Amino acid sequence: MVDTESKRWWALGLIALAQFMVIMDTSIIGVALPEMQQDLGFSPGGLSWVFNAYVIALGGLLLLGGRLSDLFGARRLFTLGWVVTLGGSVVAALAGTAWVELLGRVLQGAGAALIAPSALTLLMVLFGSRPRELAKALALYGAAAPAGGTAGVFLGGVITEWLSWPWIFWLYVPISLVAILATGRVMPAVPGKRGSVDVLGAATVTAGLAVTVFAVVRAPQVGWGAFETLGPLAGGLLLLALFVVVQRVRRVPLVRLGIFRTPDLGGANLAQFLLGAAWIPMWYFLNLYLQQVLGYGAFASGAALLPMTVLIVVLMVAVAPKLIAKLGVKTMVVGGLWALAVGLVWLSFARPTGSFVVDVLPASLVAALGQALAFIPSLGTAISSAKPEEGGLAAGIVNTAYQVGSALGLAAMTAVGLSFGAGRHGDPVVLTGGFSAAFLGAAGIALVGGFFAMATLRLHTHTP
Image (cartoon, rainbow, N blue to C red):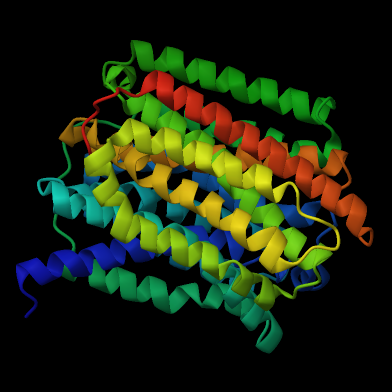
């Protein structure tokens, strides 16, 4: 028998695994895309939807996942999320055509949208009453994200080279089965609360977020001024406006709009949104610089990202909780976002004839320092500011903020990079100029994020 104290830490390990897998699913497919295009008949433009289908489903359904977690219990939704992920992985692995592959990716994204908010709710249930342990738990949870991103590059390269691309998705089957079996043994039973699902609200916010993200991630391909971009973008924003109206008039809304008047909650979510919008483009374009300019293979590129990942894990687990207690949330978030901006500006000076030690390593470590300092305090504040009974909703909101910010930031910086030559293969000078422009754009996002955090977070805010 596992004693109650040990069970809590085993549960935290499972929660960290969930975060690891959700993020890994966005990076593990990158190396396999050329083979998938050949086998499944994707067009060059359609191939990016293997990534986009997952991100859109995840971002669009997170709020609904948070609400369902509150209504039906976080443990039930956590389990259901793994079941949906398992089914989506099987569909993606067995796909013989492009549309079946995209269906599998949508199901994987939907499963992640159920897992992510319920995982954070369970974390708060397990550690919320113990501030010191909560800081450590949030640090481990936060460190699982960059670890998952780097592991995805490694595993994607190894699996594609030595096996075949379907094994990328078969990998999720045993992991999902273990998670499903372990959840009932180590996770606390969190009772749901009486209430109904705001179907109209869920439909409008899910469709609004999905269509808006769809428009932005497609814009670099069809043009920002094209009707194919402006039409869906206008439609998505209209649906989101309708969602706000629905939430105002509903007696039991999907999202109680008053939650955003909670001190620090709105500022912490905005920080998470802008942090994702700056960090994910940096990780994406740094990987491209390593491969397309410096000539690294997929495995070597993943190894080059390891120092950054190790630093983030160490800082989040061992350093950030102590600094939060000493400096407070506001100082940490503002300082972290500005440190990220400094690292991104430094990366923009990378040379076409550069080297890893000079052009990548020091700048990437500064950027990693910023990410590690800002992520944990803003995440913890976004969750702990809400009422306990709205923990799932708060977790859904902050996950949505980070994931949608990541998708929109990557799409916008992709457009910036392409306009300066990031898509011109074979010309390292032009490629580097495009990547540098994307780094500078992401630095601007982080810089603005620091100013917003300074204006919206309280000086003496509580620590998570």
